[in-house]
Amino acid sequence: MSTTETAPPGARTEASKGARIADWADGRLGIYSFHSLIRKVFPDHWSFMVGEIALYSFIVLLLTGVWLTLFFDPSMAETVYEGSYAPLHGTRMSQAYASTLDISFDVRGGLLIRQLHHWSALVMIAALCVHTMRHFFTGSFRKPREMNWLIGFVILVLVILEGFLGYSLPDDLLSGTGLRIAQGVTLAIPVVGTYLSMFLFGGEFPGDDVIQRFYGLHILLLPGIIVALVTVHLILVFYHKHTQFRGPGRTERNVVGQPLMPNYAAKAGGFFFLVTGFLALLAGIAQINPVWTYGPYRADQISQGSQPDWYMGFLEGTLRAMPPWEFVLWGHTVNLGVLIPAVVVPTLMATVLALWPFLEAWVTKDTEEHHLLDRPRDHPTRTAFGCAFISLYLVLFFGGANDVLAERFHLSLNAVTWSVRVGFFVVPVLTYIVTRRICLGLQRRDRDKLLHGRETGRIRRLPHGEFVEVHEPLDRGTQYALLSRQDYRPLPAPAPEQDGVPNPNHRKEVLRHRLSRWLYGGQIAKPTREELTHAEHDEHTAGQLERGPDVH
Image (cartoon, rainbow, N blue to C red; front, side):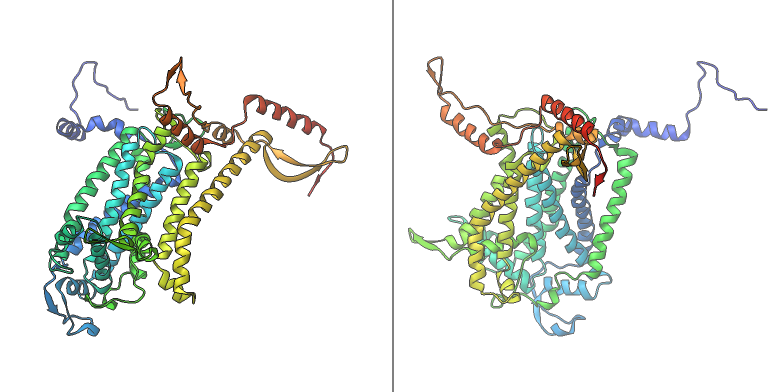
């Protein structure tokens, strides 16, 4: 038999070694104050993982980018290639292109790392686009997250620019063609275009400094800005707390989910390795950007069927679809065939997307904080507008491949181009109308489910001979989620005057009222408590009348 001795009250005991180390670290780092941080709760939903895919791809980009800088030579000095790739032996090329070939064929694992870097960039941009769409369609950009929306939008723009710069560094024929288009777009900007072109290229195209300048931007300036913005973005996510979809126990004041440590951290760590493994698999089995097949860039050559990376496809499509309009103003040629598709249209698209949270808040006079998300069907106009925006992007994206589509499907290039021109105006309008009707239909179906229950597919015959389908009531969790959605209503029409005094802001309020009717008009209201009670009574009465076997 053993006994346990305990220290008498007030006696001093020596702290363990681990406790002493923790106390030492806390005195210098304040780690004990992180307790509330590590217990922060994150909700469980598959859509929240899209942002993690972008973050983990960015980490892979940084790691592979550091490795590539050890072997890449960003020089445009001319050299004669004598490397392992025999078809290009004796070809004059830049040091940048020669070092890219050396990485691909002479450095152990170089081609794998190159392709891993490129695939990570494509996946990151795709994940950021889907992540942005998730925030837009669920309304998570509303107060207090408007600034975080802007930060995320700037990150998306910078990552696309970073991808274009990295794509241009090998100085192959395909990337050089893209640089030539970029220089033409820069020249089309009125007044300052010539100066911007000289600044970027260090003289007339192609110049001798563009690769070195793009290299510095690609490995230092833009990654540093992106890392800083991602850090601020994540800090604001922690500060504002995570959004969540409506459901039992979920309110505007709490978050239902799992804590950061150890649950969420373990899941995130495992997901990081899954993403990294998938990117490595792509890099190992899916060839991308085989620069050796294009050859070095020459200003007098271009390859047929050349296509940019997918995220620049819409810009290529606008350029190919726009008619070659131009005019002379005060002795200067204004090239609308480049200015409108490559500068005006992308700027308008980006401006609308960036300012949407502020436009919606101004139209609706919504000043409340929102931590519960909308389902896309709950906000038909916003969802329809977002789908129309995506359809416009896709029309321009396919327009950038008009020559490839014409060749592969044996179509007229002129017919494909005109289809893109017409689709630019028609497809977004049709998409908007169809999407909005679908959302309203889904709202009606939700209302019908709340009133009459879920269809079971079982047919039963009533005593008087009528056949009816048996309905089952929804579970409480689904009922709560459907009933807790927010009913949006347009603003009331403003009065032209009040107490005989004219309203000085009448025109502005009329505009806001009309926009709110466009944004919120025609929505299907949730059932009232009286309607639900009446429906339950009718279902109970019908259930008492049911007799006889089911008819299948």
